[in-house]
Length: 138
Figure 1 (cartoon, rainbow, N blue to C red):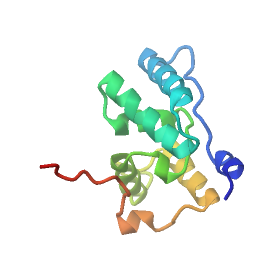
Figure 2: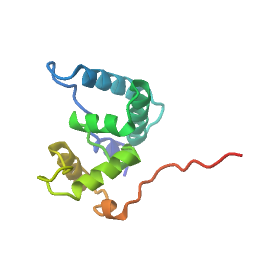
Figure 3: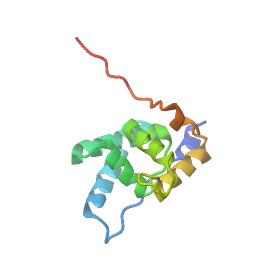
Figure 4: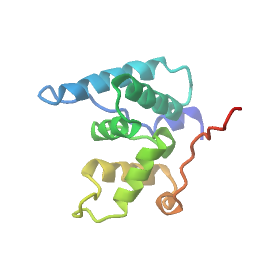
């Protein structure tokens, strides 16, 4: 897949409504500001980096930042999200919508987006999350 087609599979979040949470607006602004400054041509890497940077800057977990951005409309390939958030999504999708811990509307839309772009439908069952291993440096 060429870079232009790859960019078309990512939908960036929209700013929260004016009467929404002020923290969400700050999170959105910091994420979008850092997204523009990531020196990488791959959108998945830029999004993941911006999520992690925003989480560090605001002293929140990567998963919390990712969940808020998905609620604001972020739709991107699985590779663009932290492993902990993917685990949360996969566990949520294994439950019924009416159960506690079941998927929200935004999660269902994200799953639909993943199906449209050809993500692995069995990723939740496999339980593998590609992350960079940290080796012990002695």
